[in-house]
Image 1 (cartoon, rainbow, N blue to C red):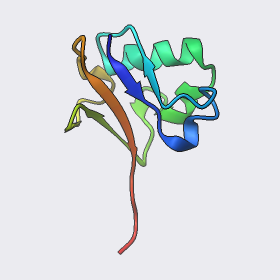
Image 2: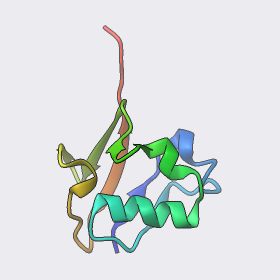
Image 3: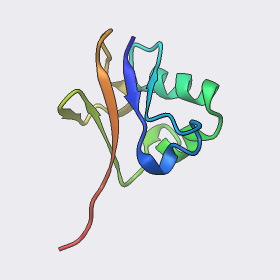
Image 4: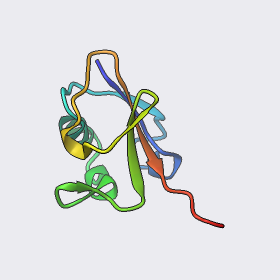
Length: 87
């Protein structure tokens, strides 16, 4: 099953869990599975039908621009990465 890595600021919604296994074949399904188990997390990850601005999705070590439609394989690791600003 794919594993979703939860960003530290959102772990209060997951009871402190940093990694959650999700039954999903796309990023969208993974977020739906997280929402079913941890209500409210979808609103923190998505803005309507898109990944929230300031977040990037990585599957394994590859940042994806496919957003919610990115397919997931059985052993994929899904990361929600917060943008880092500065200059």
